[in-house]
Image 1 (spheres, one colour):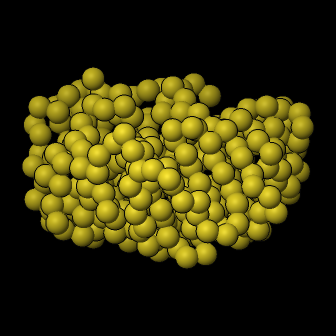
Image 2 (cartoon, one colour):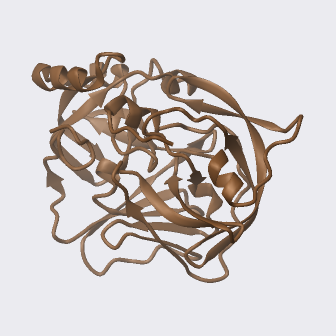
Length: 319
């Protein structure tokens, strides 16, 4: 699939797949899966399909159903859908689309093996910047799903989250809606709902949140953004005096403001809401404590709790 680095292409890669995935089984041992942040700022792991095809897949906390590209399926010995296949609806930023479902016999990554995985079969996914293969975080077993961005390692294990010997840590309760994780966010002291999305390389807020928080539009950066995207979709840049979640805050943060179909489909078009992506999450070690419905964030010792994150910091690619 041809990959594009334009902003709309990256926004299109933020698809939330509204289907249900079976609850993960407990991990019998500590599982370790290396990952990397690729040139499109996606969090990807090396996967092996049916012992035949080696490729990459995006790890996405905002996806609840796997997705497999048709070319990967063919190389991995996954049969194409039959005449009347089961279908699943995939909801993206700009609307919903149905895909046929195929069965993957085995997927291996690191020392984790998954068997009998159903996936949405994408034959002509012509969305620039979107991920060809997607694995939802719900596909991983265990009580704890840990993402260490400094070491670029995912760990899966049972029990309680490992405690860090250094760095500041904080816990945030999360709730589930249609299999998606939400936490409370605050912008300029005003509360809103934030969807945790490791499949997104950027964070953005809806207009309702920006207006309630009285965020100030940055005209110069908004014009730069419109020029980079060709003006096809209305987005702007606004500055938050203080942007916080849990025990951590960011001063003078520049955030995208946009109203994709995603918010409407989740019933959040008129409520203050946002997507929290890798540009912020990757600053921490992130642990999802599934038994307690908590997200544990640990900031490396070298960083400070209060910091300024600029619009053209790593992850946005707007220079």
